[in-house]
Image (cartoon, rainbow, N blue to C red; front, side, top):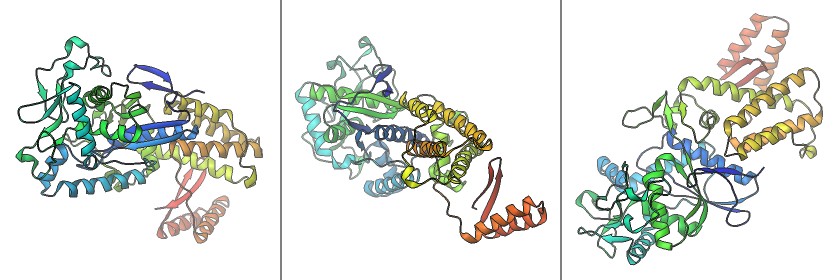
Amino acid sequence: MTLMFYNTLSRKKEKFIPIEKNHVRLYTCGPTVYDSAHIGNFRTFLFEDLLKRLLLFKNYSVTHIMNITDIDDKTIRRSNEDGITLKELTHKYTDLFFSDSTWLKILPADKYPKATDHINEMIQMIQKLLDRGFAYVANDKSVFFKISNYPDYGKLIYIKSNLLQSSNRIADDEYEKDSPQDFALWKAYKPADGDVWWDSPWGKGRPGWHIECSAMSMKYLGQYFDIHCGGVDNIFPHHENEIAQSCAATSANFVKMWMHSEHLQIEGDKMSKSEGNFYRIEDLKKQGYTPEVIRFLLLNGHYRTKLNFSLSKRTEAEQAIQRIINIKSKLKTFKIKEENKSGPISEHQKNFISALEDDLDTPKALAILYIWIKDTFKEIDKNNFNKINVQAGLNFLEVVENLLGIIPPKINIPEKIQKLVDKRLYAKKKKNWEVADLIRQELIDLGWKLEDTVDGTVCKPI
């Protein structure tokens, strides 16, 4: 099936055809490193990870750029509050982001450009906008984009041209407005900025947030590239402003396809740091969450629908993952020669892939996986399984892991522990419950727990 993705720019699903044959240039808005990223951020990062995994699975070469925002209002304010330098603050949270991403099995980008390393590119772009009449220097030597001189402003959010106004200016990096206003490209230095400033033709200061992504994406991906991703909160003002300043600077198109993930809710409410209802990855790790469980929970809903994250759903996720582990273990009991690995592709696998090819429909893909697991256990119980079925099943599970990343790595059970597990199983068959209970306790003392499931007993470390 042809890849179909929903393009925020056109408000419809479109057939995906890369600008350059077999090569996809992908830009994803990275973290603003003033604090730990929370699971709302990682919902977006995991949607982007799934997108990239699918593109790679379809044999595209992918050049992936994710920026690091290490200079904006938030980073300066937080460094002042903490009494440390901007570099100390941003290095700390950049490293934490990389650590969390690796733990969550997120495929790394090809490059993570930092805003502070690309000030010259931003100054050059701002100068182009001034030369072309799309920007102006204010009395305080800040530079603003003049939206009234750019007639296409509002096409990402469908603002009508008669709502455009440039009588007011917005200096803040982020803002909530029903109608757009001139936004800052360069912010003149003020005492609150401390020692954070750079020289420019207009005086010392620092870039606005929006110009950062335009300058860095075009440096590494070219003036016109395939896909730009982010959360729905980035659509306005950030991505709308990116389009305006980029197209105005180059007199050309900027991005072919815009893709955005919806908000994550916590226990049914909108997640908000000010309300305190959010979770960092470290919070969930302390509660015993695995990367696979978090990935499952955040990929369980379609990326374009609001998703509710609830701690009560953890058991449900663990049980679903355990069913996958159990069917894989069951299939592994059949002896298949390694050279036969390139076996047939099952209809379930084809349907699973087709669901993801249709705008990353993870709920449909997971439903197909559940049906296959249920049917496969039934067929095994009826002794209707042959080696071809087994290899097709193992191939399917490999595809599931490559695309979703929800299957935990195999647990290596020490020989001593496995012997105790087998001994307990024998005692249960003989209905010697007292011995079975004693062995269970012995395993617990050794740091291993047993879970009796409908598909058999599973042994794993405590």
